[in-house]
Amino acid sequence: MTFGGGWFGWLGPLIMLGLLVGVVLVMIWAVQAGGGRGEDDALAALRSRFARGEIDADQFDAMRRTLGAEDGRRARPNLGLIGLILIVAAILLGIGFAGTGPGWGWMGPGGMMGPWMGPMMGVGAGPTAPAGTSVTMAGSRFAPATLTIAAGETVRWFNDDALPHTVSATDGSWNSGNLAPGQAFERRFDDPGSYSYLCRYHPGMVGTVVVEG
Image 1 (cartoon, rainbow, N blue to C red):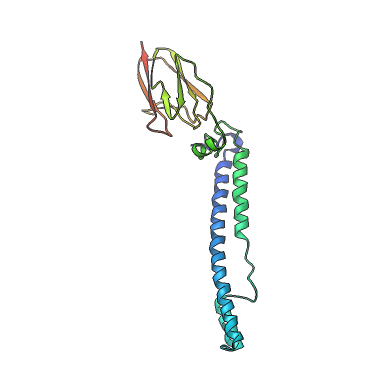
Image 2 (image 1 turned 60 degrees about the vertical axis):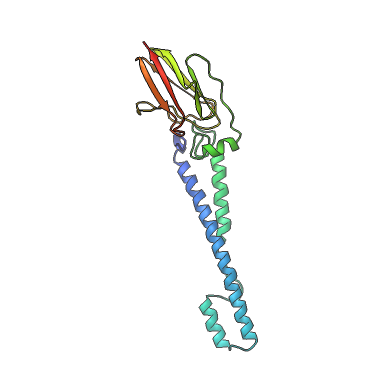
């Protein structure tokens, strides 16, 4: 997974942190709001008892201090508003940096949330791969799954899918890195043999290049 590259590579984790902090603040605000209503109800009941003469002024003050209440509603920081601002800012920043790098940042099709945000942002298929020594990635599969070439030829993989993929050797000897929709990767095979590979995002997405001498 990638957070994009270049000078803004650090921005992905920062945006993600802002989003998480915003969600936490909203949750804290919701809990406090629920507790505040209970506290206001208790203070109202206390005032009612005082009005009916069931308790005197000293008892009322002591009980009010115990509740931690003050006359009127206690002013609380609007954590909910701060949290919402952080969430909206994180989303807008993520979208704003979507097209600034090959990985589309953390919200793009090549980023952490790519598998979900790609279709939502209208990312479609990339260019059609030429026949012969090319493999397409679409529908979370390689086509053809097995490609036979001559030694010295170059294989090109084209991501025609709406999701990010990788072309990674099963033995870990080579790897394309993240391929966002519309991107391509190529590798030359000089030695005869069978080369199996997979997508790191989708382990069931496998393929083989057979190199003939």
